[in-house]
Length: 240
Image 1 (tube, one colour):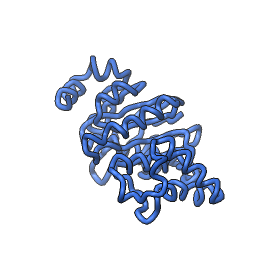
Image 2 (cartoon, rainbow, N blue to C red):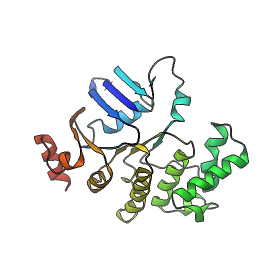
Image 3 (cartoon, helix red, strand yellow):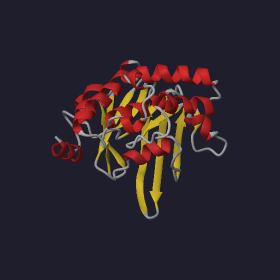
Image 4 (cartoon, helix red, strand yellow):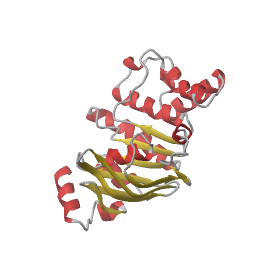
């Protein structure tokens, strides 16, 4: 599981995370919603050790992420992360993009890496794009390529940071369908999203962030349809 315990994080004088407590059980999908600047993405970056923390602990499968003794590169092979921008390598085909990390990071042979890449590209519905370069693909296809690259490392957890925010509305559905597939397969996920419908349909729990704190946490039926917090109600009224 992922355990976030009393995590605080500041950038200069601005405290972005003000004592976050969150547990993600194996196979659980947690959607994180909230206004821009509320700390949602910063928490994801801290879970994957892309940002340091000022205090508290983040434990992944018993490993303290921010301990000096932790091998962060090894840890990240177990935690896939997909960002708003897909960041693919433009000079490599989709197949080569996905095969790269298994070869370099996991030490797979070229043939093994290509087999993994084909499997994951098929997994996300891009088996017909193996020899295509990213510039020849739609934004939705490039985002699914980014998901395939993360899955090629065979992680136990996936972190998604507003993966549909840079897409045209007509392309959002195909990416959300891929996340639904992963959910159905039992992947443990933290999904920072502004797609309230997705959060309602797929999440086991929803966390509403407000000014660096988790204002409300519970099943979608509670947080989205019958919120206890006035701040949650106000936020949802503005996004629906």
